[in-house]
Length: 67
Image (spheres, one colour):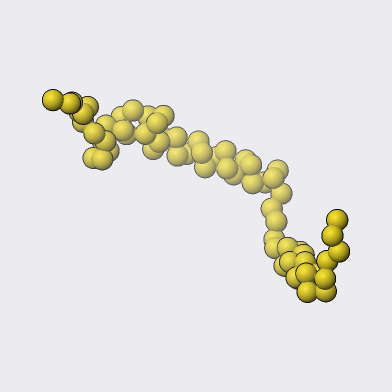
């Protein structure tokens, strides 16, 4: 590995200090919350619920036909 100069080392140390200050959440907490959010939104997802897709005004109603 190449030698790092003093400026690069300072930048690296500053980056590590910032990372230490960042509050992290355990996956044991965040994953169940994510699963709950996904399950709540499933009814609104047009890919999983075709009735919602029918209400979307941006869906093309007919196919393109070449004359």
